[in-house]
Length: 609
Ligand code: AGP
Image (cartoon, rainbow, N blue to C red; front, side, top):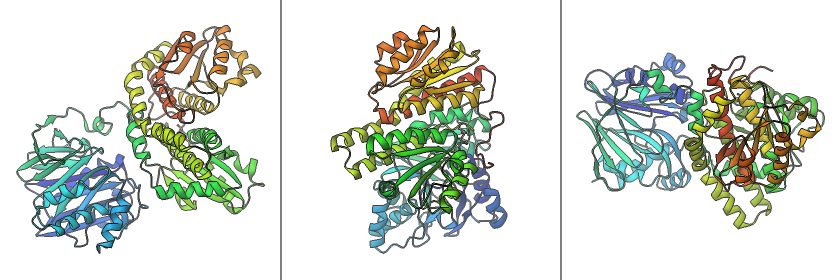
């Protein structure tokens, strides 16, 4: 997730306003920043890696001439956060500049074609392809207007984008376009604006026009014109008045970042399905050749690793060992060796315990692989190969969208490994890949149809003193995650166990009305789980079940249930089944008067051991 902004002013220079607007978009990404303006037929660019304030201190982002310009604040997905990869990106001539939020899926093929046509690339980003593609399109047909050159070029793009483009050919215009990534226009007294999100221009104007997928916009000193990319037909759309405060707008109207990020999961899961093939291949090759594989992480990321151990085993017949990073050195510090492979999973890429475990393994010549959400983090620098999960910044302290993204990446790795090892038929592969592709819609359905029910359940159990979370098989990981969420956000003491363990001790806690949450996908453990439900029910527990929508048997046994769409493959079930648990923690926190975004005693990234 990045932030783009563009403006055409009647009076005044564009750069200072672009700079201020990018500051208001900083929550969307902040590892690099850049501005491009046009003045007297020339494009001026200032950009660098680093936070906006730091880059401004060195380069003075306000000091660029011209009343028209574009800007970008970056969350790296393709290419480390380096100056060369910062936006805006230009074409060979320096007469076209582009800023982009999203992921161009076919950028490798396009880049190869353009390089074969003589284009010289300087960055590792997918975005730079857009600038050269517009240049190539305009060169091939000089009769095309700049607008039509952009329109033609974007038809060749696959993937998600919100772009803003300027060119010295038509120096009084900004062409922007949208496909999946958000884009909104602002109309004010002194100019017109385009941005990833309304906070960018809300202090200037509250008149906003929301751009839809497949639309292109021409911003000019006279205003804005919207066209459909497919047939260039004009679209009439009047501004809406935004009645949010800038603070509300940063949360897009949600009361807290946590609920915004829970709702963002369909989009982030789609982005996680657009990973760079060669990194997925490379990591799965390392895993395939590994003698022993440790999955090392903390907290929620550890739960993703625990789930992954079932995925790798069931799909690729690869034994992997999930280990709490804080215990790794004690548990394996002496035995880890050159034949060991560590897959470290860390949303922040900066968790001290995880990095300490990696350092220990590295000192004993183990192979280090990484999965993180922050390109340029320490974990990316110490890993032999890493994958960026492309979830965008997660502001809430509780990991929600980054957890489901981690699970999606790990499932993709397990599938790839299974194919590589010939452990799965093509039909099974096609079935699972189709189900994985469909998960964003499944999560969207859960959020849309079950949120109200979870809200009611939170009201009913808000005074509960303790919760059990139980699951079997891969759902054990989901149960652990549900427990962590409720503890860390609503401060409710919670216990999680593999359901089969209950009778080996924990069941002694059960008394009348004791809430027990069961994670109940209709998988191989379903029948046995029903026995566990009966055990608890017989002792007076209140049964809360997360069930598939057609699971009438468990619904009858449960005091309360939340439904997820049916037909989720067992190995993918933690992704949809986690969502009701995230919502439960969030609404329990609200019921108990806590701020879900800033839970007491916790930090977003635990950089101390
Ligand atoms: C999860 O909600 C917590 N914020 C915490 O457990 C977190 O998952 C853990 O600290 C690991 O963080 P990382 O993924 O950035 O390494």
